[in-house]
Length: 232
Length: 232
DNA sequence: AGTGGAGGAATACAGTGTATCGACATGAGA
DNA sequence: TCTCATGTCGATACACTGTATTCCTCCACT
Image 1 (spheres, each protein chain N blue to C red):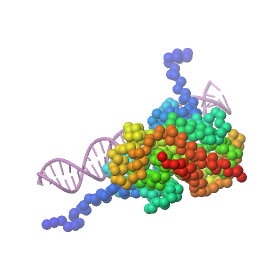
Image 2 (cartoon, helix red, strand yellow):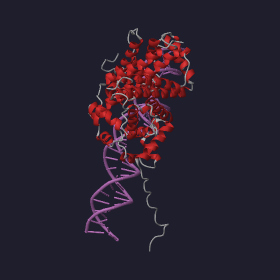
Image 3 (cartoon, chains in turn yellow, blue, cyan, green):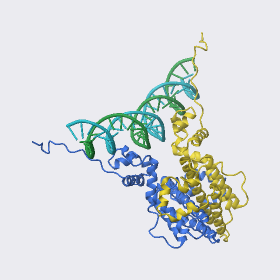
Image 4 (cartoon, rainbow over the protein chains, first blue to last red):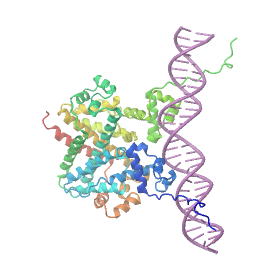
């Protein structure tokens, strides 16, 4: 005679199926909440009801997880349809990158830190190149792309860095760079940094967004100047 | 009667005196040899014949050590005497920053990652501002400084990132971005990245140094254009 | 001579990335 | 239907991290 249900133990809980997508999503969630340093393989795995070692079937190193995370958010960057104007296209790409970094601040720590060879990373590069395609010889175009993205990479990184500093000290940007901790005040008071002092005291503080936009426009102006040269 | 020398034990080894300078030097040496991840408080301390906890008298967190390291190498950046020409001055600052990063590759991981408020960091900013002082109203000058340094920060970071990738894969830059791992080859073969494919196959590869210089010149051109506007 | 006090060192702790190993559920073959 | 090989998952293990705490030892001072 068979045992009743009550006698039979439950079958062992089948492990939740996993895939890279779920892993990356969990990692991104953790990073969004607590920054990059809050991402540990153990915590990611825990969020998926799995043991840490399970992840190594999908990833072979933590760095690879970071690569996947970057590529994932890069999907947010390329717009559905690109504007025809190259300038506008580049502007949009830059701004969307910035917005992605504002949504996921940890992106600033990773951006530019290693080549982005994932599908979405390549798509971003493709979009950038496509925007300028045919407007000059390839080498000029490449130089332009590199220059523009070097600019906005650097600018975004600094913006996030400042943002964190403000948050950490609890000071507004104005107060912060106006006198900052006693340290900067003291430094400026030494008179060894006259130009800096003048800038800090007499400069108007513009918000990060417009500062980013103006710098970008300058760079785009520079690109425009080179493009008008006759293509080879 | 006093004991002979042989009876008396050696006096306890007096701990080596420490200061930030020595600590930072040790940390930089470690980082130069094995990258940032080779820098651990234990290893730094060991190199100074001290216990790890000893460092906490001079530093209160590892991040602070990184700040000190950055500031230390920034001392290499400001030239003894600045060229009178603003363009040349900015160019020199950019190139010297790049060279510092080539000497200390870990700098690329830290540059722009947090505000540089150390004495040498401030000196760099001062020098940059001073180069443009009086050539336009303060706000324009600040925008210019931000733009230029955003550019070269980003460019340097990418350069180092590529350099590491080449080294890791053992491929020359040409071979690398021409076909890279099978992965990139496959991706390009899909036809989803036509502009990128064209760039990879038809583009001449220029060495990183001149690429950096050209981009920098473009940005400086842009700055020049804004400076010629009548100062407020 | 005793007694503070300070500062270095040892220990301790919670956590990390990753290698290794053991068990166990599942599929194939008899 | 039973057995055995297989491959996957979890537990365990290891070397190491940054940092808090505790303890000991030496020095200066009363």
